[in-house]
Image 1: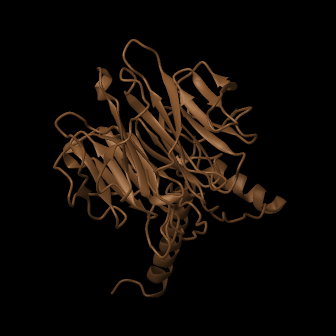
Image 2 (image 1 turned 180 degrees about the vertical axis):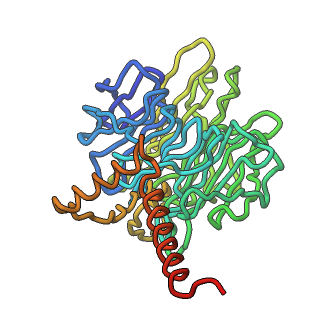
Length: 380
């Protein structure tokens, strides 16, 4: 497991019971996650330093930011055919995790990003907390380059998005379930984001969820947390119906340590899901708590997905087509001499020599013709 903190990335090999530092330290890691289908490959989105990549499970890291237009990478979404990064100025996408291309939403500060489908198109849902939010705050891109559509049906007219989470693909289902936490409430979608419904069971007058995470093994199991806006309070909730309803799930968390800032869910070996919660209470320092959720329902069978190549929306710069140039044949020695003589004739001090010579010749011919006419015909 990997954890991104304000001081770098930490690594655990015992489901969060203990943690070790990695070579990526001394900088805020906004987001970190493993690449599907590659158990040792992972990526971290950093504050002001782009993306770092590891191929040994997090022990060592290397820069992977080539092509990024904005290096403040706040959130990552990793799919079977590529990955996407939400930055402080739009989206970037990559097919190989090495070279990035612009992905749209220029001018928006992207705070949330989720991969809602791997096939038939690489589909992203993004939320923003900065930019012109009156024109939209939740967006979807369905593999059509840098073109995004505003998601509106069932959502408030304006809000700030703190998190978007996508669950695993249900068996026989065409799309993944989605959950979005906003300043106007928590919403869920079962049709890829086209329509949304508000979640219930939350004390909305006291708690606004700021983070959410699905179980990777159950599209119905969703955990949501509140950080209480940095003040005292906070809470942890659980949903077993894909976010339609929630119930408190913070038993065991200390009363003064319930400011939940992030949630991770891990499932391994048929055991109950391990839920890891990062808390950051004011003035007390951050901490990670873990529980095995033994009361979670048994996960259902899941659908299978195949990789679809991540679309690269950037239009390559056209390469100019070479234009054929006519070839010329070098003049012969005699023609060169004639050309030099002609150029000499039309240069100063005789700029009109050819024309004057022609006039003299014509005048001479006319004069001779006139003399012959007078000699033969004579006057009457």
